[in-house]
Length: 106
Image 1 (tube, one colour):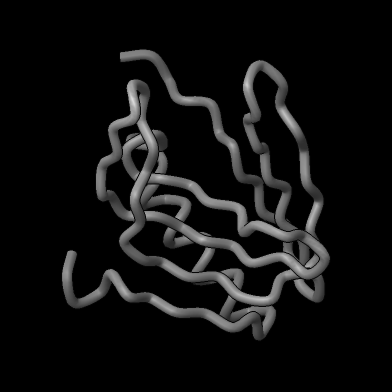
Image 2: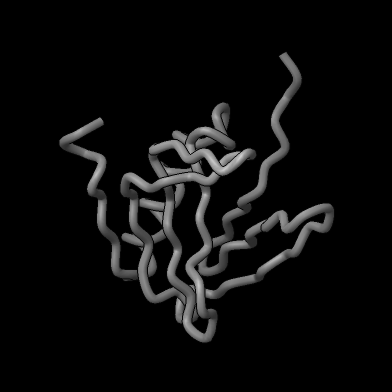
């Protein structure tokens, strides 16, 4: 199996997010004070041909950005659990508001 590309990188007080939008990759550097909250929850992911699927998601709410940044388990299969562990550690260490709504229902 091919190795998955990492879309999230962590530093002590900063997260670097890779966001795909069509064919372009947008890079977002976020210090802990720009992050309003990090939430693990169920979400509906849009798929081709007007279909949708419920899956686990990491939802990052960012100050000054209209829509939250979302990473879905269905798309990030190989790295999703690693992202969750790193996000939780980052949130606790930097006192960012954190919710884990998947703990009971996973």
